[in-house]
Length: 277
Image (cartoon, rainbow, N blue to C red; front, top):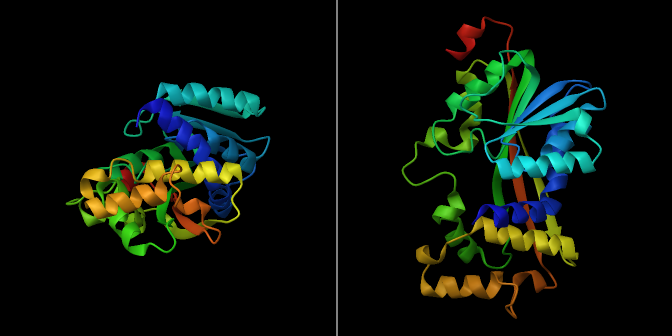
């Protein structure tokens, strides 16, 4: 999916995801007036929610590699009246452009630990830029049940490359996002904690919620045709295409849920070289 279309789907799907992500943020109990970092901030929505969580004396910096997203983020913050409490920078999670101990906390959703590859190097970078006693938190989409009444088809979709992304067949099980407590232990973070929070949607669906779910279908199961049987592909089109007379969102009893999982821990008061070596 090209960048502009993907950005639009993200914006639309946030109507569905926002209440859950805000609940995840509240679970962290970020200190009022604190300064934080959002790595992989995308178009900036979570930066605004984080800024609201730490209050008017706090500040949040968002970092992303994609200039198109950062341009959108700056405009979003300005329209929300939060430009003085937020900032955005282009940068790489593997080499954060900040000094050691620059922030009271660092956060990353659907990025650090969720991106393909070894999760420890970018997680070490988060630890490096957070002050002793500060919080390091990573969160990601962790499950969904979006096709009620069609568990076999949804299981097939979940087993496709798109369905299990960013994990892939043959990857080290230790690199799966839900192993994050083990990563935190390896890095010496104290009080490692995990929590899973569910969101839901049910009929009757508002127009906004309907658009969010359609966008979610398209992002979650993009390009699955080659991995499905002809029968399953036909069933997918019948259920998941808005033009279909059997579109699943039109079912009077439609209900779906999804989850986000968050892991966090505190940077201990020890020698920095001992913690991140």
